[in-house]
Amino acid sequence: MSRLPLASIPAGPVAVPGAVAELAAGDTVTPVWRNQLGGLTFRLEDANGGTRYVKWVAAGTEIDLPGEAERLEWAGRWAAVPRASVWGSNADGAWLVTAALPGRSAVDPRWTADPATAAAAIGRGLRLLHDTLPVQECPYDWGIERRLRGRDEAARQRLGEPPAVDRLVVCHGDACAPNTLLHDDGTFAGHVDLGSLGVADRWADLAVAAWSTEWNYGPGYDGVVYDAYGVAPDPERIAYYRLLWDLA
Image (tube, rainbow, N blue to C red):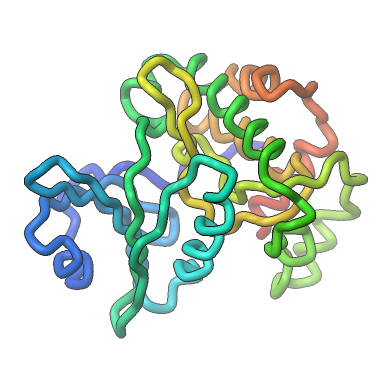
């Protein structure tokens, strides 16, 4: 099973939505990411070196930015995640403004040139998140039934019966390589894009985090993620949660 990355750093000119231009209020606006649903992330830099980020999605897109703001506020009590400051919507789309975190994305050119270091930071950062966020206090669900809601019976039949839960944790929900930040010394710095954060088996995150190293670095780094996390690969759970990722 393989997959091509569906999100990337924009390679050409990007039209800045009116709401983003208004939020920038004269700050320098740089597009830094486009996701698979067409959502955009912009970096806003003011004259004093201050930095913010704006996520923007077109109206009708199945991305819940107010829900992400709530999750960031909840998770931010324990974990290194961005602080949400402003969010809203209009007829064209919705937006979420967050403060910058220190560090660079694991798909920054600095780290695609050193994928072993980046993959290890992804594994360690994910373990830290799973060990730190309190499952019993988490109000958000990312379980299998929630993710399959609205999917047809054919998808459920293809997926089959789930493996037994290994360990319930508060999952990131989109633990792909771009959503881990690293300090310049290669240590884990933080997580971004937590719009799907919720309780699930840890393999729902682990299987996709390791898989994403293939999309972003090439083959051979999935084992680095598992080693850094501190777990042996579990082929049954890996296969199941990767197929769930595709179907859901």
